[in-house]
Figure 1: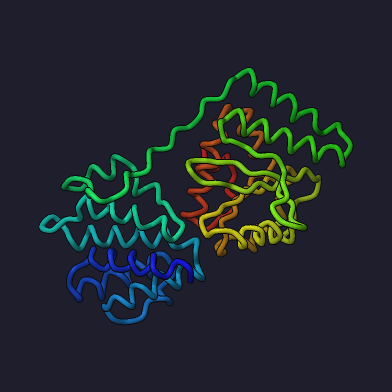
Figure 2: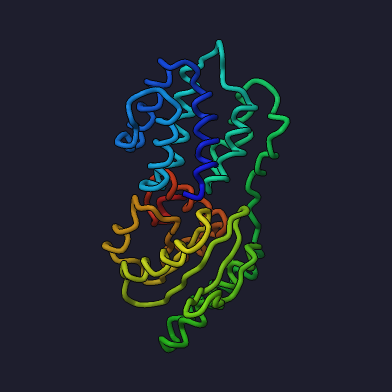
Length: 300
């Protein structure tokens, strides 16, 4: 894997979180068992076992990787206790290494969490990522957008798709997400757009169909993700929702794809929710649960 050196550095740090072979032999498999990746733990307390656990989880159960790291941190806090507690510098170093394997874990970046650890921040560590600042949209523009999406249903099907893409571009722009219109990065490939949120770039796929989006369409977008860096993400917005088999194919899978349907858009606009916060919470829930689509009503 391209991330092999980054995984080795991360494994070395986590191994040092739990000094002593007895602690390592117990805590690491316990963490793996709690997040459902126990099959990737090879008996023994040596560093290669930790490296293998991280590597196999990243390769085969990517959605479990962040929960595994969080559980290892929890186990470390328990094993180290009050006599030899984890330090702020160690957590900062962990946050510095995680982007090397394509992840940031918001829970480990929360100022309130970091303040619970003794000691000063790591002098050589990169500055901790800032707390996400969500954008306050203009109410008048949101009212206009709400009216526009209601009018979309009266358009002809072919015209409706293009107008829906323009609507989403304007919606993302209202929230300061730096949207880009549809583009062709390579021969034969069409991307409906992209946007930025909290330092991450998302590809966008948008469909306005009366029928639910099937698994095949999700596989197409996921194929576009697979040809890009491991930290790439994608948002699929299907106004007609998604078929059960489509969602089942991507739940618990190795994908950085999250989904939003028409009801999610309606809830966001009608309840005055912040779109950037909605997407950020969907992304976090996908990491925590492995579910590519969780309804806005279940998130707020």
